[in-house]
Image 1: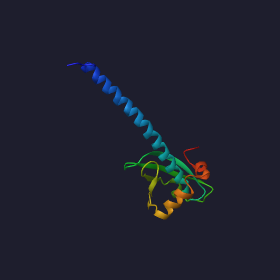
Image 2: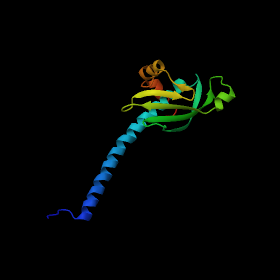
Image 3: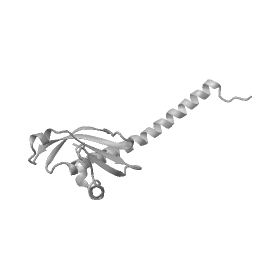
Image 4: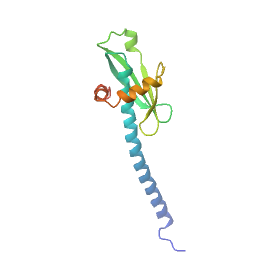
Length: 138
């Protein structure tokens, strides 16, 4: 039987191909995860009390596949918030479909209804105002 690559060499070729495939795939996932995290962070100011300053605590994967969780605190600002409101930790979980399509949004108070989600996606998230208010941009 004719062998072009010895058995040990074949394993090295497969290992190299696998490493290349994983590296290429992880780059795409990383960019997609970053876009999803940015969109989820940008939703926070729209859902926080008016005039509040936002302090991010954590941005990371949510409990379900394709979701992002943002933990934050409202740290005051020009709004008149009671101290208990300002110190209470809050969170937002963004659920995504294919790519970076936001399909559902849940806060510590429950799910955001379909109309509010539509308005948020259509008229806010992709605007310069949302980019300027992104609490992760500071």
